[in-house]
Length: 125
Image (cartoon, rainbow, N blue to C red; front, side, top):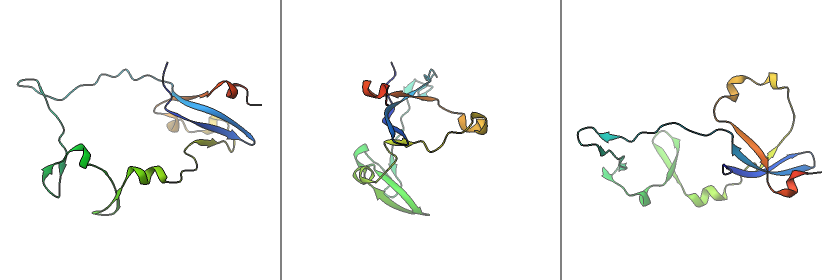
């Protein structure tokens, strides 16, 4: 059974249904490691700081947002958690459209389905 990728609610009008987002496809692709062909030793990716020209540990690496060319602002995980995201846990349905009116290009990529979350969500009315 696949694990949910996201959980939240779908709402339309006064009806709110708790749902889980599940992957509709399974990735069965083959992945390779980079190796040194002479002795089959694994080739690793090393993290280097451009400013100090030295290798840095994972604990020294954070996130930065580029506000202008060559101008970065540090962003912490705590700041990201505190950002107000009104749609982070809710999908509001505002209208239904005919399937033919949606461009097929927008439907390419990974496929997902929504599953009700809990027995109470099986019958929302």
